[in-house]
Image (cartoon, rainbow over all chains, first blue to last red):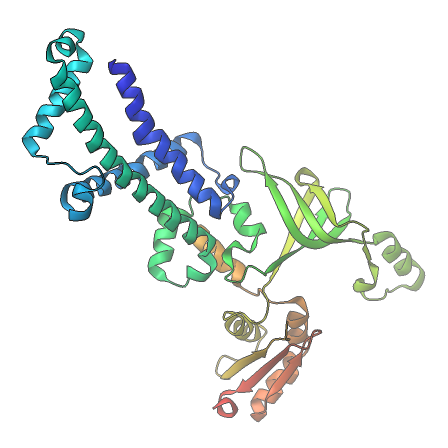
Length: 299
Length: 61
């Protein structure tokens, strides 16, 4: 009986809330982006649930609304202690269970109501935390200007996230219309370019492959032929050939390097600062003060 | 040195501009500098009708 009770407690207090947390988080961000070792994952789960447990316990003990709802009944500290004692004894020993009979079932029913009340709030808190984490990760690009948020994110939200997710998606950008453009050199010296549409990570957290949208291949042979024949070539842009494919899959172990360029729409709030920084970076003296105004095309 | 993912995110933001704008700024750097020195506004137009105005502080005010 004790083993059964412990299993039920582990399920109710650890497994269900953890599954609930991951389920809610999964509505906001793909869970495969989390790249943690098993021990780190368990540690994070235990610490998270311990904090939520403590918060829910505090609420149920001291917060008027949570103290009595749901499953309200007249309760006292001494009745609670007696009930738990009776239930624990009854579960431990069959003789005590038979001896106490109705007293056991009364105490058991009240204990179930108390635990039910606590679990309701515990799950509600887990739900709220998962929701907050989901929003935090999903809107990281917008919220990252806030220093407090960035500290919390560095401490709790970001460590389990795969660096490939940060690098190959618009995760860090406020505007999710940002495209990640890539020039990709393969082991056979073929050069591709396009927009990164999707990427895949293996169990160790390594990049296993990626999909390129609007893929183009650099016609190196024509380029070299032109160079040999004329001693010079037209601009490199003339040698890019559209690949008749909606999406091109490239195996990561055939990739030598990735040249990435992030292109958010120009109408974002960050754009003017980025342009300004870029202009200064190109050699305009720092004492020359100027402002940037961007007029984006009408959608 | 990028130690945290937030540093990486910050790093990714640097120069995160459309290529046409990067190229225009690079190619027209001297003209931009001369315009700003003269106190004149400099306008870069994009392929889809975007306009980037670089205005000296005095003109902007």
